[in-house]
Length: 154
Image (cartoon, rainbow, N blue to C red; front, side):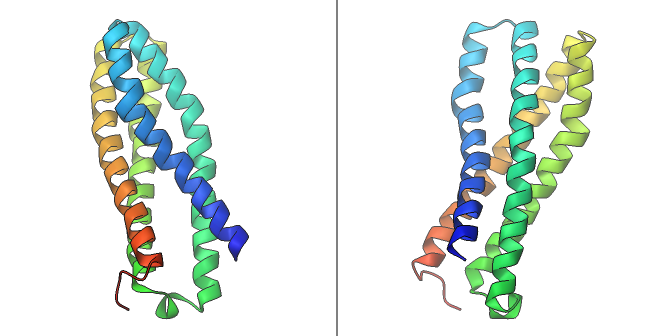
């Protein structure tokens, strides 16, 4: 089970760490130095690359997470923090799927057609949803660390 925990952890770090970098570092730097068309092209390229990694990370998180729950003997036998992590992870996955299909796909099309106003509006929506998912991801990490340390009663 150690290998599955490691894969689970690395996948979560890729996803949450990538959101942290994009939201807290790349976004403000891009605003400071790039004009809107270049900034939107940059984000289109960044999302294309990052989302490829996130699809893999989310898949591995779900597979390893459900496998570890199975190893515990099912949800009835898992610690309470695992229930919280599962709920938060499923909400995050839902938000990610929404961001990808409902936001990124049209954003990508608007950038390709150089429809900057429409692309900019969608980027603003993506920014808010990534901020929400980043917050949920950090909470999930905190729940995992506190839970493993025995900080949640069963």
